[in-house]
Image: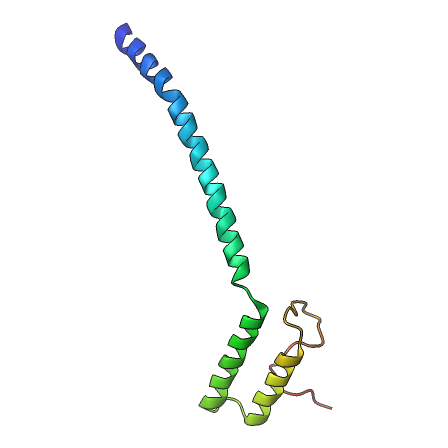
Length: 103
């Protein structure tokens, strides 16, 4: 019984550095993967591409008859005039989906 316990301790002591090294390598690889994923995700959020995509979606709504030509032109003008990174909720340049302001 003591020999088995001694053998286990011997094997454990021999493999412990490898286990620690592999764990450290795994942690480094996880951080690298997270960094790469974050970097490429941020690059894919191009404001101009988002604006173009919105224009295409509105064009499709117009084609289907859900938007009139006047409504589409109004939305198009607002999107093209607005700065590409208009993220604030109280911005005056945001697209008003309810149509032109009423007097």
